[in-house]
Length: 333
Image 1 (cartoon, rainbow, N blue to C red):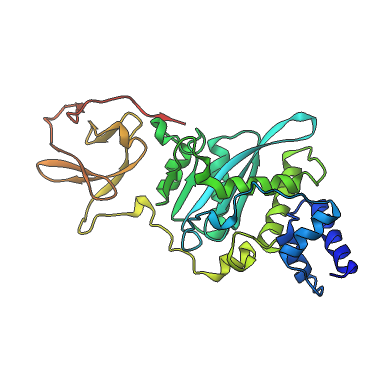
Image 2 (cartoon, one colour):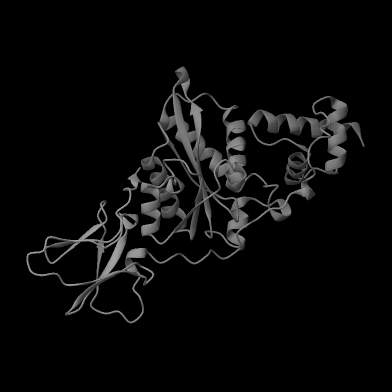
C-alpha cells in the first residue's frame, strides 16, 4: 500500500471525525469511493492502516456482526419507532429531543425539540412525520408515561391520538431497550454529530441543528445497517410504502346501516336518550357504535365486537349499569 493512499485514508478519517460523523473503516471506505479516489483500500486494510497510525485500537471483545439477528419490517411506513432523549443547552438547561425513525428504511421521519418529555411533544413529532410521509401502520415506543403507559394501566394521550388514525400502538417489554434498538443507535449518531457543533442556546437553534443532522443522515450518510450501504432516503424510495391504516372513527362493521358513533366518557359512560349507560372504563376515550332497535340498545367497538346489549329502561331512568364491576378508572396521561 502506497504511503500516499495511507495518508489519504487517515486524513479522511480525521475529517469525518471532526464533522461528527462515523469514521470507522466502513465509513472511510465509502467516503473514499464517493470522492472517486483510487485505489480504495478494503475495510480490513483500512483497519490495519488506522492501527498502525495510532488513531484506532483493536477491540477483540466486540461481538461479530454476523452473530446479530435483525428484524426489519418489510416496507416503509409499516412501523415507526419513537423515543425521546435528553440534551443540554448553554447554561446547563436540559431539554428533550424526540426522534422518529422508520423501521424498514431507517429514515429520520421527523424530530422535535421541546423542554420536557411530554405527551404534547410526542404528538407534535408524530404529526410532523405524518404530514411529511403519511400515516404508518404501527408506532413502536417504550413504556414511558409520555409515550405508551398502557402496561401501567393508564391511557396515554399519544396512544389515543394514533389509534384514532387507525395506527397500532405497540411497546417493547419493560427494561428491554433492545426492542427499540434502532432508535437507541440513532440517538448515539445524533449526539456524536451535535458534539462537533456549537452548543445551542435556544430550542430554536437546537431544532435547526437537528433538522440539518436529519438531512445529512437521510441523504448523505451511507447506512451500514442497510443492504449495499445505501442512504435511508434511497432505501425509502426503493420499496413501495405500506398501505395507510383506516381511521378508527371511519370503521363500520359490514352490513350496518343507520348506526351512529360516539365517544365513551372517561368514567366509561355513554349517554343515549337522556339515560347514562355504563359500558366499561377500559373503553374510556374510545369510539363506539350505537345501534338502536325498538326493544334494545346495542353497543359495539370498531371491530364489531358487542360490548353491551340492554333493553330500553322505563322512561325517567337516569342510569343503567353494565352489570360488571366498575374497576379502577385508567389514568389519562
